[in-house]
Picture 1 (cartoon, rainbow, N blue to C red):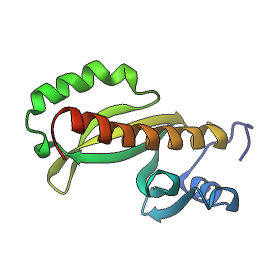
Picture 2: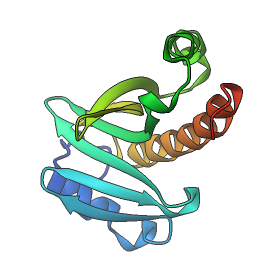
Picture 3: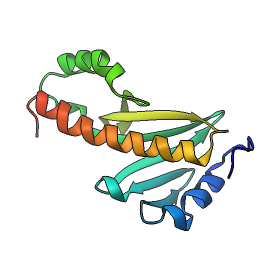
Length: 141
């Protein structure tokens, strides 16, 4: 896929990301309408990708909300710290009836493969930093 303004689909993303050039850095698995991208260079962190309308959404679950001793204080801190996390946004999502903090990035379905790889790496880096720094700052394991 080049910068010729082609639109990404899950099928095209799976094919392009599974190409041999990236095989040492990441592993791609299709799970229904979503891709699970395992970032090998980032401790095998799982990042999920989907295409929705004009966007490619990439996300990684961080940890359960109910593990935070003071969620109100932590949520306030996240909103203030948001501008320190490049190319990513914090969210809360439900997984099997449990809320999790999540880190999300969005791209255009017309983004280049190079830009998509940059986003995957940035999200992985930000997720690991958030897990190390934010959880430590709030006294959780």
